[in-house]
Image 1 (cartoon, protein in one colour):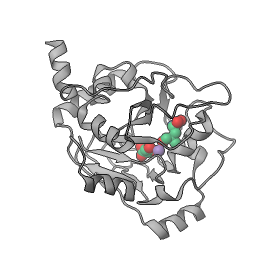
Image 2 (cartoon, helix red, strand yellow):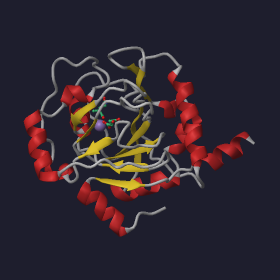
Image 3 (tube, protein in one colour):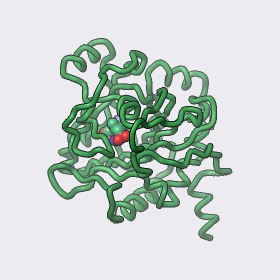
Image 4 (cartoon, protein in one colour):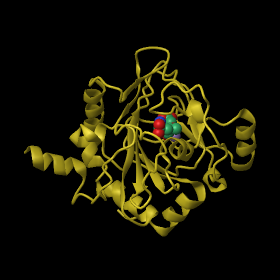
Length: 270
Ligand code: HL5
Ligand code: SIN
Ligand code: MN
């Protein structure tokens, strides 16, 4: 469950690292069911697509669904994250981007850390994102596209647009790069989209430039993203802090479960 030195080097060099089929199909199924349950709980943590009632994203499911609470402590993800951040970590943000079939909208080109520095006064980009594929991700259903190595150049943009739809959760539209910035970066770094079966996990840097196209295929592309932050790098918001569903208040260092979350849950419910 430790990354090899080659994997660590690859993460630091490329800004992302793909771990194919880390979770098994049954575990993915339990996570999908947890999402389905959670998306039915009304509240500001459920974000809909601008064009209609379909769910675009659900935040903080780990605060309500035991499968999600287990996943973030699963040694298969927590140990690699601790290894990359070299210290104690907690979950700063947890979301599931639903990207429904026939209409999941795009996620504009952006760097996550800009959002968190602006909105939460997060001192340093000491985070690791894990992206858990809840569906097979192919070229057809709007995979995340990364610009490999773009995290090494620091933040490209400074502020956010004044036309944000929500004060709470920023959409990448609010901090997106200009066409010219993106063209220059792609010239230098190229683009890649890690595809793989449901259960694959991609670790990625909070500074890597990324985005994804709309989903016009008949296949959903549900992507669970947990952002771990160094416990020595707590947010220092200037004004009113953002709500707990978007910036989690539980900053206790996470300890890994003894075994995969699916086994731990089975023992609890047996
Ligand atoms: N929705 C996040 C937030 O903190 C920011 C985006 O992909 C991360 C840009 O509000
Ligand atoms: C996406 O779900 O395609 C976007 C992911 C992200 O911005 O982190
Ligand atoms: Mn992002």
